[in-house]
Amino acid sequence: MQIGVLVVLLCLVDVSTSAQVQDFQRLQSSVEELTRVFQKISSRYVDKTDPTEIATAGIDGMMSALDPYSVLLRGAESEAFDQLSSGTYIGFGYTVGQRDGKLVITDVRPGFAAANAGLRRGDRLCTVDGIRVDTLAVDSLRKYTRGTVGSRSEYAVTRNGTDTTRLILTRQLIPVQNIGTCTILADGVGYVELLRFSRNAPTELADTIMALQRQGQLRSLILDLRGNPGGLLDAAISIGNLFLPQGSLVSYTLDHDGRRTDFLATLPALFPQLPLAVLIDERSASASEVLTGALQDYDRAVVVGRQSFGKGLVQNVVPVNDSVSVKLTTARYYTPSGRCVQRRVRMDPYQTGTTHFVTRNGRPLHASNGILPDSVVTDIALPAILETLSRSGAFADFAAEFVDQHQQGKSATSRQSLTQQFATYASALPARRVSKTLEHVHQALDSARKHNEPSSTIKVLEQAQKSILKDVLASISQHRAQLEPILKAEIKACEGNASEAALERLPTDNAVQVARTILSNGQYAGFLDGDSNSDQ
Image (cartoon, rainbow, N blue to C red; front, side, top):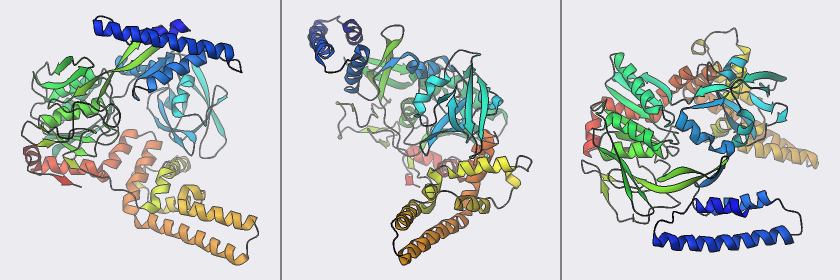
């Protein structure tokens, strides 16, 4: 075990210079100390210990002292990086999330194993191959889903509280999905959602834009990077090359010795003149910020949305042995103007609050803590009284039940009184899924009944419960115009029409509409010249 720990440590050090030799000698001394502690634990601790478990905890402790992104990868844990590198993965073709502490299917890709077997959006996972998984963390499910092509697993799911349904899913090789929704909006404004930066993302994005051009109406483009966590740096550089002139510096990195590596646009741009707006939010990170920062620095795109995540660190995966690798932060990346966008942890020690950056046209730029949009746009939030319904997944669950009850019905666009039907559905939900206030009153009422409180107290609480629910239902009716597109989109998604569901949401998407207005009404040039700034 001492050798295993030493191998991990030595992979972090290159002993090619005298200074590094000194570092190596200090490392040797530290390893000896660590080994002695390990031996004392093994020989003296009151209970029997597992050497592998203790050593792993020690390595994890070392990595946690660095930054959140430097970690030890064991076996399948390196799979996410491999997916981005290869552009494929072995699985079933669904995504999963947590709702009320339980695993729920949030999306099913048409044409792949999960959809072919009958798995549906909104299904609640119970077991995989007889093993209970319903309360697992999302990441913990991975070991039950991966395997070899052609192997099978039995899934048990519940659907809208009905009896358990059992499905047999067959693993297959699935391409990573880089492109989400794409369409042409009013005024010839194209819209493309880029989901991640995998190896195939640049080619797929170029093909998608050219397909929109062949429709003959494309005058400008919205590139949506909201929720895009990043991926391969090379993919971000290649996508930047689609819009920036050949020879442009797209990004550069500096390692711990100050060595600089430049990443250039090496080919002629395919879309050098296409007016461009980029959408970002607090979940846009890493490669998303590399691309957005470059386009903003060159005044090549108007950036719309909310401040990005702020991940300016570069990781490389260093193999330790056949089953273990170290994902290690090896450099910081910078935008062409010199900005490092890293926030919170490992901020650039060479960038201070007095460092100033400007775009090619002289517009001042935000220096750190992510990319600040040129036009800050907040979502049109639901009223607070409906937020609990939204967060609890009530919209999605209503849609799943609606589809079940209307399997022989008409399309969602011709169905009437959706909000009325949803109000009826919401009134029967547990209090905790409807309103936090309603939940508290419900708990107080239960307690009052349990402890035989005076009937007058119970009546007051009962009336309060009825009043709160009445207010929620009134708010549903009052905000019908806001809710109806959400419900229609959820229904289409449950029917397996994910692309149609996404299109339903665009007309009420504030950031999309602000970007479309900027691109189509003459504001575009003003933004890039520094003449316009607005919050929406």
